Image (cartoon, rainbow, N blue to C red; front, side, top):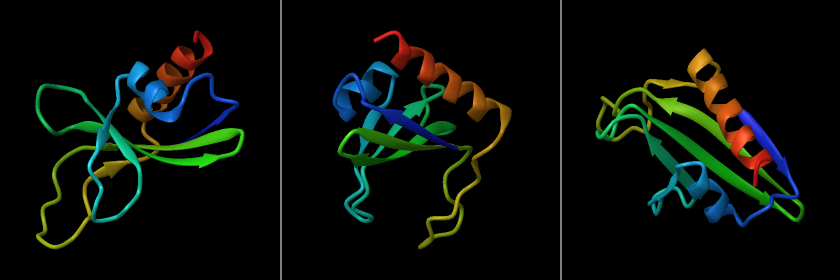
Length: 99
């Protein structure tokens, strides 16, 4: 699920940290992404990819339900439009609105 943030009130990393997300190492893909764990384990977790534009950010959010099960692939059990993802979008938008 995508969120467009026009004229973000903070820089990308600070904004996502305030929402509970931490940078994820993506040397393999080169994309900037952040994760927020739901428990004290690696999965399930919310995972966002970020694209920056001059006056906006686009955050592409999904839920990684579990670790990839096939070696050598990036496929995983991801949810993109579930109610839990929609709730997380609302949570993020609420935090940003109050900054």
